[in-house]
Length: 190
Image (tube, rainbow, N blue to C red):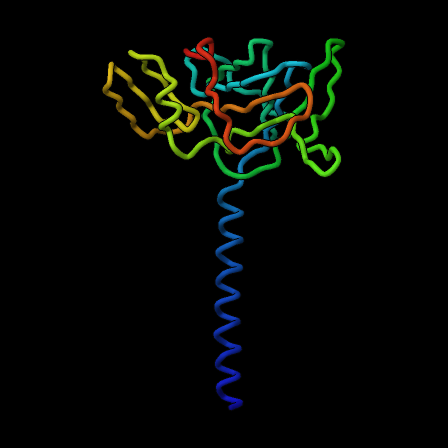
């Protein structure tokens, strides 16, 4: 009996240690620099960052953090590459007087949590409803780098490397949505 208990403890120790090493490796290898987004106060709707845009300036870096200064149009183009992974990103309102204020990720109102920033990662897993909303005869790139070509009733979808990043901003906190039913409007095309 004692022998079985020792064997079980060894197996448990090896499995637990392996799981801990795998988790530490995942955390270490998927970390990226943080991003700070500076959004004009009162903006509402889609904010888009287009990466790898020829002729656009690279993103400035301050203390190891990428700085995104979003223009009033809600569209920022940069020659920098999109970096995926985990980090602590923060969003700031830029007020009319030039001061900056941290936008809280979540605000408790009564029993409900509400948000100002509705993250791109919460977008749909299926492209079907997005493709149906696209106009005919269009070539576009979705937030995850997928390229869509739509000609008449024929639609081609090719996976790609992410070059677009979207998030939705509301001037007042609203209930968090997991699937936003809209895509960026036509003026967000390139």
